[in-house]
Length: 291
Image 1 (cartoon, rainbow, N blue to C red):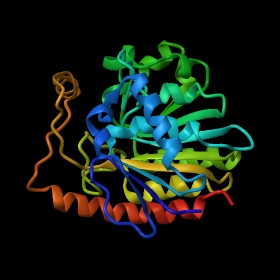
Image 2: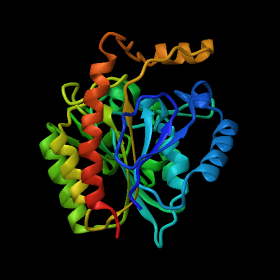
Image 3: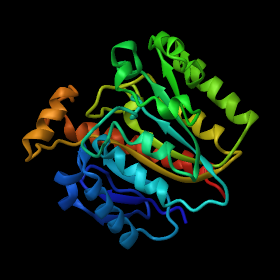
């Protein structure tokens, strides 16, 4: 029941006990960073054909594939609507006119009838600051289907825009985690958990995006806060891998987003660090899974 699944698109995930590896490297160019809705529909079919009905955490590889959480959440069959808890340094709720990409998928998950609410926890990027306010999809925030939990970001504009109820801003990660855990304690409900390891500080694990403030203890505390309601599903992304896009427009979009270049000389060491973190996260997730 808890066997982890590796969607092996970029060969970045290390060996894990009892893992089931699904080789999907031929999808890398079409899926990485973003894809059309037609391509995503085709990939849904691949998931339907290859994923077992019951499985554990799905390992997605690089954070460039975080939009694959969308079809994974769609596949969850639960007795009642469930919340989605996303640990991420970014809101992943940004405007994107070309289909769906790793920074735009949250809006689509928030729209699903099976999802009661989406919490994006650990945001430290300027994507939710005033300078990028216009890029955020506001409907799920306004309608109470999405909340941002941030560290060290000035989000004063949200109150002026009538969105204060959707923004929980803190000076440090300790305060954020305490407040989130308290809210879960008051009203526990089943949860789907998605972890993008760019939520962690770079000394915890290096990713190929700008990174946040969490230490491992912060993530463990969030996971523990979900025990009462139980987990109905989970995925982990944010591995580090290097790739050069064949298409010029993906190279251009990555450059616009200031995606850091991966130092090939450091890659093996960073991946080993990532693997050790995966083991700890999977152990914590197993303890919070729904019976």
